Image (cartoon, rainbow, N blue to C red; front, side, top):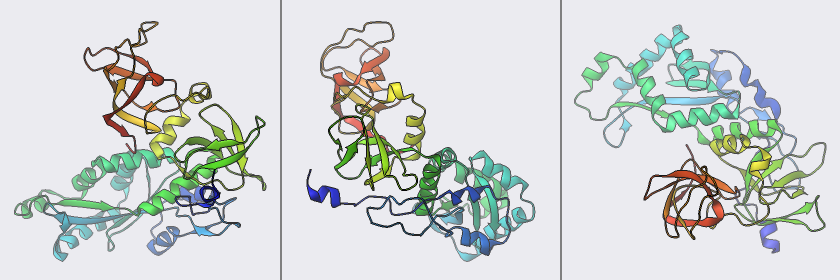
Length: 351
């Protein structure tokens, strides 16, 4: 491995993450200036993900702001000032009685902290990384926006905007703050799945040779404790190693939840290359590279060249995945070593 690979820290996490994120449990707070400060609360962590030689102090938000605005037209441009003032008025009503908005936010796996009607902002927080995964899923699917529109915009508003196409509420969040909150929860949990951002070596603790991971490899990382280095578990063969400051980036929240739900006996491979696909976690359609006759009713039989639809996820280091034979509709377990990528195979990025 080249020295350049070891020194390259592009893509590494650049924040110190600490257990101060546990202050997310705070109740509803109507002092919006204090709430805004909580978005940039400094927090000192045990160890940095950075490749730098010393730990630094960075801001780890404990509150996320939802910025609301009425948008119009196919380009979703902000509506005029008078229309935005209507939204402010609706938020003032909620500010006086938080019951409805508290219930709605809870339905999206978050916790209400405060409302600032003048800034058209709702402040929320989270208690686990699973809540962040669920919340981001609901938001990306449009459920959060639709629910806020139903709560805030009444029949009179919709009648007044009939001449404006695609009117509705836009919800903006600071993705960087959400990402920092997510990483903070992972550090608190003690171990998490991450992807290597460069090729790198780890001092081996299970064999005489060092552990080598390539850029993009997913492994289980454990942050240092009391000055020790990071510990890594390779999903390819179960090898373990240590490194003072590895170059890594946590996998997205859905992948984190999925991988943590798998027992280690299923998660860790035998050391052989499992799948000839360019992605660590994939969805879509793959192609059988050779014929296979299933050894039982739970295994799928197929011919070379058959297209197999991935049901759920294909994880590169797993020995099996659930598939559906495109030409027959039969479903069953498929060995990952027996398939290759097609143009209809994609990397799973988010839910």
